[in-house]
Image (tube, rainbow, N blue to C red; front, side, top):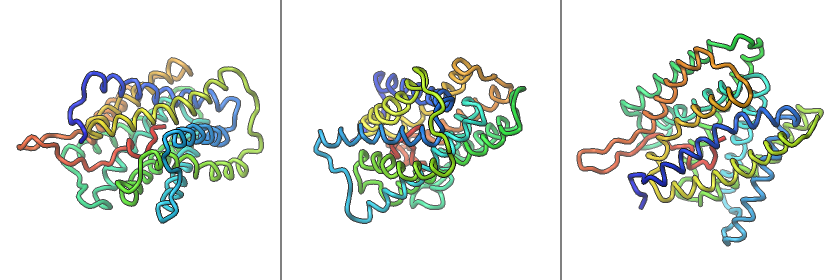
Amino acid sequence: MSKDHLNTRAVFVIIVLTLIWGLNYSAIKYSNEGISPVFASTLRSIIASICGIIYCLRKGQRLFHTDILLFHGFMVGLFFALEFVCIYIGLLYTDAARSVVFVYLSPFVVAAGAHFLLKGDRLTLSKVFGLIFAFSGIVIVFQGKPQIAKPTMLIGDTLQIGAAFFWGATTLYIKKFMAERIHPINTFLYQLVFSVPILFIVSLILEPQWVSKINVPIALSLVYQSVIVAFASYFIWFKLIHEYSVSRLSAFTFFTPIFGVLFGIVFVNEELTTSLMVGLPLVCLGIFLVNYKRLNHEGSPERDSAFPRALTGKKT
């Protein structure tokens, strides 16, 4: 039985996790300077997959299924791969600060999609207001570009929004076909393992040169994305969602775009535009409202209609 209230330890851990996820966008900017984006994403999945497989073998956990769940696992890997193709290529054209705001459109894609695709998952008044606030914030950020922005920034912004829709599609697919039928570590592994050949093929087609330069910051960036983010942080998140309410935990994900914007400004010298200052709080408020779970008159938690990214095993 999940604990409905978060203790101090859980709050501290989830804030640290959102800090790690927010920094990941700046880390990708670093790796893009020397490694082609889709190939870097391929390496990320390979390294994280190896870590996950080693963990499963040590714990005696099965790696793959032999029934329809294996097909569902492939579909999840496909959506996951397309999401990260959009994120990594998009960051060649747009700022990390803008990227993290656009990608966090995903919880609202899930909230809206769940209303029509999943039984019992309906939009509540708070979620509707969350969607309105978030959409308003996205529009404001999209229209307000930095002074040094190039016309190609529109390409990057659009790809990040595409990534948000693929992320949302992954979440809805898992909720509809895999939830409660598969161990979370298998969902996590399917995303990574099946994404590797897809990412590799895309890299072969689109990227004539995989590595242009390699140095310590680029290497450390890749290790951070693979081991710290894609494996360790997700593993800790899984432990949290087995112990605490997913809805309570997900309400804290609004910290991720905040940290993402701050790290983009500090580490990659991105501009803090007026649109970011206005749009970011609206997006964060929307995330909170979409994930907010009130208590009913009997004191039991109401069902949250948005199946959080937590159960997809990834945060970016």
